[in-house]
Image (cartoon, rainbow, N blue to C red):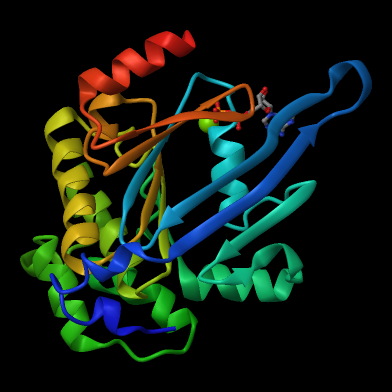
Length: 258
Ligand SMILES: Nc1ncnc2c1ncn2[C@@H]1O[C@H](COP(=O)(O)OP(=O)(O)O)[C@@H](O)[C@H]1O
Ligand SMILES: [Mg+2]
């Protein structure tokens, strides 16, 4: 699972764009049936290149969360394929999916989801401990110093600010060197200063560490930290923006009526 792409911060940006880290092929998902049937995803096909930071945007109910949950193996599609690091996750059984989520996917949620009784360091290393893997101390030091957490490692979550707690969650997601980190409104509970810091760190982790990041957000400013925005509307992928700015994202959302 460990590739040289992650070993040397800053060396991977140029060769990181050739292969998709995550691929959806003709994903379809419906909820309910008959008159109450909702098409949450309508044959959505999209690639997410390795080392890139992508934001998924669109009006409420457009299918963003459903797409992210299917890509992350947290929900199943009705049809279509999902490839994570070349593995077709739609072919895996529950046990294999659980292992894949643990070993190859990182998550940063709106609620920080830290274990309150553990220190920051213990929270960061928890996924490796659960997987019975040793911590790569050099990589741990790189992640922790990049995220500015060196002098916070012995603190418990309640002794940290919201922004610091979310940085711990980002460190935890990066430490396993996953194929992809998924963020679901990762700055939704932070004020704009702390949110900006977390977003800048996510951007740095993609630029300097080659980390692939896919983030759902409704905030055009948050999306402007990404390399690319993909736009959803009514279960379809309806466009994308390269090198987004808050203004270009707002304008595109305006056209969607979102
Ligand atoms: N568990 C569910 N049961 C029924 N309908 C759902 C469920 N989850 C999502 N939906 C519907 O699927 C569509 C897409 O939802 P969602 O992916 O949550 O959109 P978004 O994240 O863009 O707001 C919406 O119409 C929503 O009401
Ligand atoms: Mg949603």
